[in-house]
Image 1 (spheres, rainbow, N blue to C red):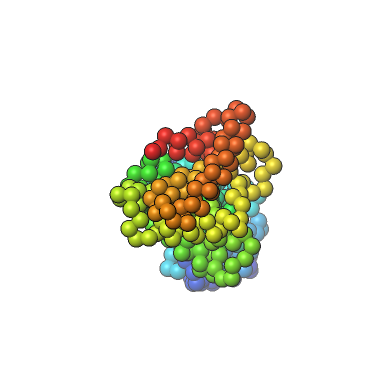
Image 2: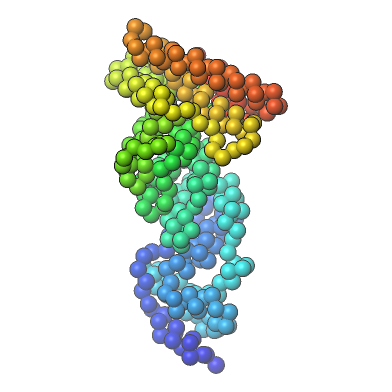
Amino acid sequence: MVSQSRKRFNKEHLLIISGAVPKFKPTSSPELDSIFSNFRENLFLPAHLSKQHLDLVYGKKHQDDIETTPVTVNIAGEEFPLKHIDRTKDLLNLNDSLSKMLKLMTKSDWDNFPAFLEGMKSAGRPVSAVWQEKSIRAASRGGRLDVILECARRVADTAFNISTRNMANHVMYWVQYTALADNFGQEKTKKALKMAEHIAALMEDDAHAGGKVRANDPRASPEVTGILLELSAINAKNQGGMDADGSVEKYAKKFLATIHHNDIQGLLGSNNANALSNGLLAMITPILYGVKTAASILDQSSETVTQLREMEKKLEAEVTKHAEALRVSGLTSTALGLWSYEKIATLP
């Protein structure tokens, strides 16, 4: 016998609820498909249901009713058969699932990432800054930083926000990483510079870091302006060694202005000396290379070059100190800081 409550839901089976449930393209592996499907069915879909349907889906007393007499809802033109969801068993562990997701995603699978972030936000579970940083690293190594830029553009839907100095530093490092890993080849460097400039422009939006300049403003971070200087200087070097459009001079002045008011920072919140040295080395080494390259391109008699040479000495001392600390600690070149240091040391 169907309960009175169940009869009420039967009458609502064609209820149309506004707002589509984010959907995913088939991926490269059944395991990844399963992860996305679980999120969609057990987390994203409930966020689009009415209270009455949520009571039906989560209520243990309605489980048999749903199984014997299916109920469907129409959401933005898509039919969903409702099923019982046991919140203690059916929902995936978020951290474990995100970790597996980032490891499993191939280059084409990253197309699903913006939709995933949209689903998490709509479900009231926006992905944390920690996991956003991990996704930046994974996307960079997977050759899909374009997806990260798209997520940042759609911040209102994805909650992928570049509003802190730490997040800005992180994304800028991994943008230049794509060029560094290619030994700053002309094509990759030019592409990385364009993306870094897009990110810098995006941060001016109020949804990110826009508005009045404040303490620790990521737009005025030497780690951000330093990467812009590095990529513009190397791009100019790759194209004949002349600052034809004046961008190297522009970014050199911005960098010098910001570093006089800030200290290069490492990994925030870390009390581990090795982690701190590794983070600082990873951050400072590319900037040092940019300063050296810019100083070799610009007018040697200019005040800008004089200041760059002075800054070069200071940064060189910092880089040497942290590289030595890591070597003494026994860390290998697989550590990101040492990798960056040794990679750049081989470049002209």
